[in-house]
Length: 371
Ligand code: UD1
Ligand code: F6R
Image (cartoon, rainbow, N blue to C red; front, side):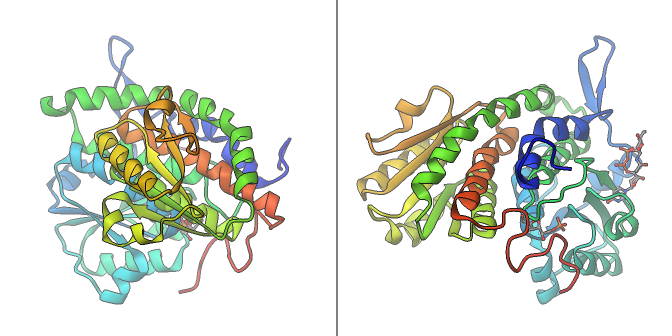
């Protein structure tokens, strides 16, 4: 049931304040002062000690689910103190890459049925790792075969392009980082800020959804383009990859997410006055580096669209020709949840304006159950 919306993708983008609320429901536990003190993930509570003691956490997934894990990786590294590595499921299988008994392997999958992820799970089970699932589908193969896990509870996702599952996956993995990190003194400030940020996140998402018309206007400008680059780094490298994936899979436009730190090592050669480039430059520890990236792209006459924090449009725009997308600022580790939304809206509007099937892009299936 699409309700008042024309397409499932549109509905699922706009229901993110509610899906995120459901994802967090019952999992943020209040202390005596009624302040939220801690995170409770029922499915993991008996396994946290083992996870904390593991030699390494390995995230494994495909497509959007991989991107969600990439977005959560920095906060997991920061709070857990355990090294975190990333594996695209098919690549892990191609290489028969190392997975050890001392590893915690975390399988991220909206459907819980993706063949590559499931085969990687079997491989990790054979190698003796603790296998944790993060999935949206109760009773799915990945939920059944993992040792333990967390359901993201985002509600059924029908549009082939994953939107609300992506943001709920990031929120679950931020909660996972809090749960593994525990209440050590050294983590206290970060933990409190992250918990406060989680509680307020649905409101911030509601605020960023008001950019809908602005993104439709931007889509009109980009309708006939051949290609779109998206530059991000740090917490928002994942946003660049995921934004580009949305544009390519539904709007059928070539798009590439680029790690901004790699700009000078090749991608800069593509920059001219025609190619549109989105640069994510919201406030975090990477902000000044992104300002310098903007200057360098501008010096080569790049056609820039800069995503920045509210109030920063003038500060980040190098010239009249640069467009700014202002988004609310949140705790750095949660910023990817806010920042992806304008790009989801852009991909959606581009697709509708270009006349393509937004809920069922050609050649794609919602759940990829073959290798
Ligand atoms: C559970 C109930 C929820 C109830 C809540 C109240 C289910 C599915 N969930 O939620 O309805 O409101 O208790 O306390 O009945 N699991 C895996 N792999 C996965 C995902 C989950 O093994 O990929 C396991 C978990 O380890 C856990 C179980 O499935 O044993 C349920 O997980 P989850 O729904 O996340 O647990 P709760 O949030 O505690
Ligand atoms: C993109 C998309 C795919 C899936 C991928 C993994 O919008 O939906 O990239 O994310 O096929 O699917 P799950 O998460 O079900 O394992």
